[in-house]
Image (cartoon, rainbow, N blue to C red):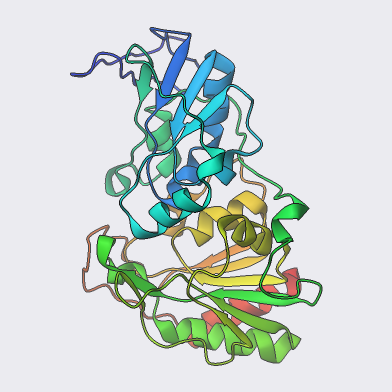
Length: 321
């Protein structure tokens, strides 16, 4: 099988096709993966980072989410991206000790992950066209030590509900489901199970705000970033259930094989983030009755989801738990 290689203005950037054949590389000593900044985007990158660690002697990754790569080979070198985004900057500062002093040499082969979902309709298809990948090293089992400093007792069953928020740095209100659907799902789940409801978010009422109301049936609110990133991953894995709008919650649920219900807005579609090698049958999604998938910021999408469909999904979430 032949491999197509396209060189752009920066002649160290290569775009291999197809994924089943590894592309020629210019410098097998060093590679720099210029990471995207989102938590979900960094989760999508995991199989590609793992592949690069097998191809190159030294892999350099600038990421705001170093814990996402704790299980990678030792030739992965993480360095601080010095992100200006609020949540990313906060996480970098909290985990400064996880970054090394090495930076990629100028001669390193460079890869830039990116996607154009309206055209490709698959984040993994876009990544496959930009970065080598063999296999699918994606799922992760968060270490038990990541629960050591949780701000609640994890020995009692709990359901996480990630609330809808809007962020000034990337304002896409139509990505959210209606807040009332999270309220309904949380209320019904609590009625059916009696489980403790923990509302989570990372708001500061400036850059990021709740889009709607706090979860009314919540027994505990951790909405100002009280959960560290390792806390969050462990909690997703070990929660009796996760109920959330879309965003990082979908790839995080996929990665840790959570029992989850992700409620979509109109901006994007669930199938754009799925992969045939995902092994997470308990991650449920629901899109509006008439899905939009416009991929246009602040489009007037029809977000309507019937109570009948949503009730059915919540009952499925309960039975999966």
